[in-house]
Amino acid sequence: ATSDRNLLRESTLYVSLEPCNHRGKTPPCTDRILKEQIPTVAYACQDPNPYMAGRSLELLKNAGVRVIGPLCEAEGRTLIRPFEVFVLEKRPYVVLKFAQSADFFLGTGKRTKISNPYSDMLVHKWRSQTDAILVGKNTVLVDNPLLTTRSWIGKNPARIILGHMDKSKHTDLRILGNDAETLIAGLEFPGEKTISLPRLLSWLYGKGIQSILVEGGANTLSAFISAGLWDEARVIQSRQIWLENGIKAPQIRGRLVRSYTLASDLICIYSKN
Image (cartoon, rainbow, N blue to C red; front, side, top):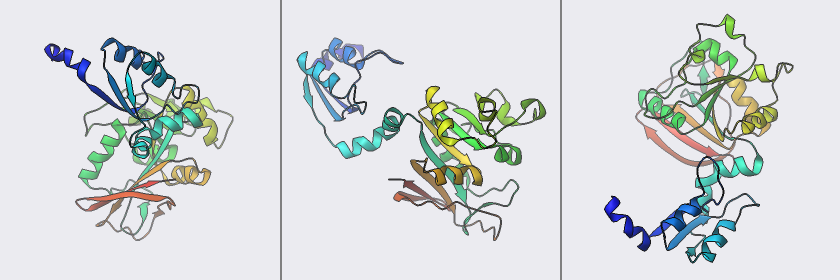
């Protein structure tokens, strides 16, 4: 409440990342801290940008603010990992996502429902937390997905089609609607039959896209895995649906971070490192 604003002068601000001292999408955080006369700032991680690391902390110290940290740095690094990848590797943070049957198939070559409604809602939550969703052209043509957050409150991320496509010949595709921005990578790289993933990620970096959720299909997922261009994988494993044959799910070789159940599905989160 406005009447409690004076309590800011007696407070401690806890942040996962060193406050910024430059103007980007928002004004400098350090300016606001000094304006509100917050006396103590506790942080988990310094800014990963070597040109910025520690500068805000020195600015605050010189202005009389008590600075404490780093605190819980390992946990803080996990929280800021997408930002760290964007700043240091100059590419979006890449999350692979797919659902597989109990016998490890993605589908049968036609639209196949594997995950349960609770997992579907979770995927829409994940979408709301990312900047863009990427799918291959074949997935667009076979599944005709909408790729929005309609089952969760949140923004619709941009949609990226990996491949070459003439929009005028596919006016019935839902992904080309006005629900969100749609980018067709083939229009940016017209001379490449197989689009270079490093070049693609560099292009997305230039557009300010910090994170992408790669939702398929099998060839697209395998391309990112083979290139080593992924940071996290979220695998939905059905324990009820058996397909017996079809398109094999890709194999994730990473560190299992956590797993949990949602009704009939097992959710596994992997980290590449």
